[in-house]
Image (cartoon, rainbow, N blue to C red; front, side):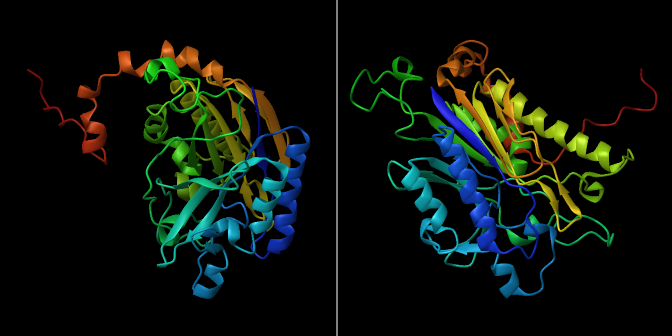
Length: 350
């Protein structure tokens, strides 16, 4: 058994004091630890507001939202979180804006292992939504990730995290037959960020590595008709309900189709009194059912105890990839990006 948590973070304004935000984050970690959580998932761009909704002309101001250096655990503005995780003996997955030493920008998440005292995996968001330039509509909610970030270059790599379950089989201690050791080693984890969760390709890449738990932080607008399209007019309430529905849909469906647990952690609430972000932090089982979910749109910890052995039924029966996948028919998925429709029919059919 493994006790996990989603740390949902409520509203964070554009000019919020970062030390105040960090105190809130630390409080969530402590609360999760007090409930026995061994692993806590934090949102996308955990430490700041979701700045890609804003257009910055001042590079100095923009850079305030990024963490620099190869090792974020040593960044002064966020180091206390990793120190606290180490002290509490709790693993964390946390999202942030990364500025590499050569100046590249990525929307990034890292996994910190408390037992090892270091980061053991990094993921950079691949499916960047939105536009490079702001919408013409001056009242639009913009999404400028394509302006500030590059698509991730680390792929969808699963990894094992030590120290989370007892009696995990280690390399060299029993048969090297993969089927004999399946589901018996240290937990197999994977990370996605926000919009990635809507694209099944990332989930399947992780599923093909036997992933047992997918972690996903997100900032999802409750109102953004210029981003989504507005063919069907909606009220604010209807739009938020639709955004929440689609979030739940992809977390539940992809968890089921890859026979894995998932944890999604929201940055939510109303930033700056006008930018609405959905909540909906959830822990989902490999059968697609919601195990636990948030009840508010503010700071909240969602905790559940899960049994990774529950993944085996799906992986060995309905979604036994080795027996049922037909890769010879999937070529279009990797050979084509945009839609290519079949030819139009002739006006008169013979």
